Amino acid sequence: MMKKGMLWIGLLGLIMMMAACGAENSGTESGGEEEQETGETGESGGSQEASGGNGSEADLEIFSWWTGAGEEAGLNALIDLFQEEHPDITVENAAVAGGAGTNAKAVLATRMQGNDPPSTFQVHAGEELNQSWVAADKMEPLNDFYEEEGLMDKFPGELIDMVSQDGNIYSVPVNIHRGNVIFYNMSVFEENGLEPPSTFEEFMEVADELQAAGVTPLALGDKEAWTATQIFENILLGTLGPEDYQALWDGEIAFDDERVVEAAETFKQMLGYVNEDHASRNWQDSAQLVSEGEAAMINMGDWAKGYFSNDLEMEVNEDFGYFAFPETEGNFMVISDTFGLPSGVENEDQVKQFLALLGSVEGQDTFNPLKGSIPARVDADESNYDEYGTDTIEDFREASLAPSLAHGSAASEGYLTKANQAVNIFVTQGDTERLLQSLESARSQE
Image (cartoon, rainbow, N blue to C red; front, side, top):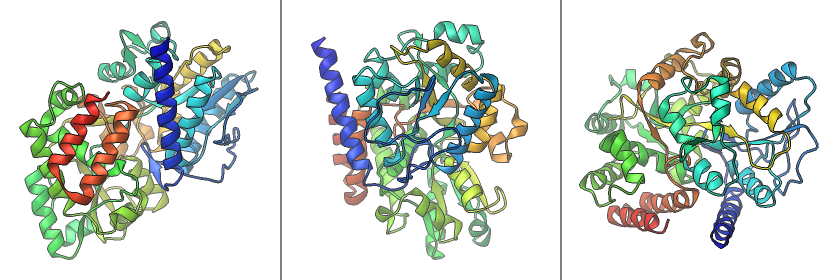
């Protein structure tokens, strides 16, 4: 009991610290969740204030940080679909705005510690789910549910592994975002006679030509450090391959491994091509540099595709194109939002009815076109998705999946916080040895 109590104290303190820092930031976190401090009310229910949470009087309380335009529309569409099928169940959209998701996580930690869980809540597949909530005995296994709903062969086995611990499955993936993708301004590439690079060497050659032409090669907005961490994790994936990339986070490969050192040096070289004002920009600001032609490329999760298409009104494969991060063709840096069954909820049957909708073809094809993501299921209706979506769906089905560090899947929240700090220092100082020592030290403290 003492050990579990200490775990909770540490977890709660960490998440509250992250919320305090996150509230200062603008922009979004993984999945492109836009920060909105206004707490606007959605069509299917109001956003809950980030100051606390006393539970819900509704039959089903759905907790998330989806308050941005596309994600809110997707969630509301899911809720509307659920209420059409279950008109007798009252639903509350208990989304918490602000802090790029950290406000919601702080509220959730307080409620879970107080044995007042929402009916179900958004959590990233991987260690954010497993080390934060499964390890604390706060989630119920869903093995029987998966069998009853016929889901075992509807998600890739690697994805099911990411939402599993010790042989039990703990959540249902509703979407997939890809982290190892680079979006680029097609006019800039055409004007300079360039083709998308597939290797690190080709990337540096293209970047040199762009720089000589007066164009920033790579847009970065690391006002929030995860954007730079995402670049580094993709370099690691390209250098190590998916198996050894996973082994790195499992502690089976040291950070002084010559390949990891090589990746850090590549990271340093790549940072030499970013915009000088990167530290004052969030990812949307840096994406605008690409849309305006001031920068040529950006490595961002494919929520940026939705931003280019919906907010900046750019046409895919006309105004902007996309390609796999160098050296990662055939691999897929996966970021997945999931929902599970918290321990102690009184409406277990109703939660499972909602999870069944989340995991269904109809539910995923209702939500994802609005969110800008692709379905987690392998049998979704591709006619609901544009060319980028269908290309990504095909890659997802065939590629080797790798869990994102930057978005909470590869390591614990505590480790990610320290990793982001180490990367933030590296971006400023460029000290490769210090970066790798900090990452190794943080792992030894886990």
